[in-house]
Length: 44
Image 1: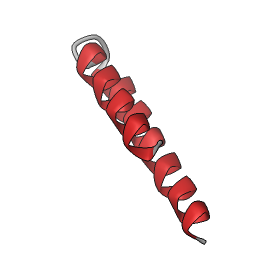
Image 2: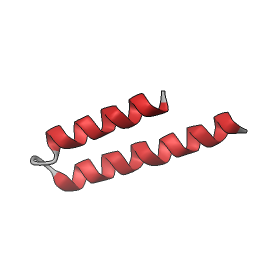
Image 3: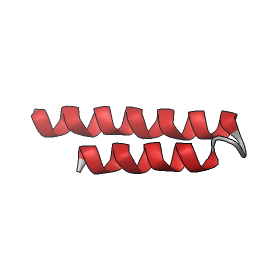
């Protein structure tokens, strides 16, 4: 699930980077933080 989410975020970033780089970076950063948070919860 973690890998799939990161791949989706990366694909989204690549598709939309040329439209709004700031928004894309922010979106990917949120997804990354959420992924790390959920991974921590699962590991515990």
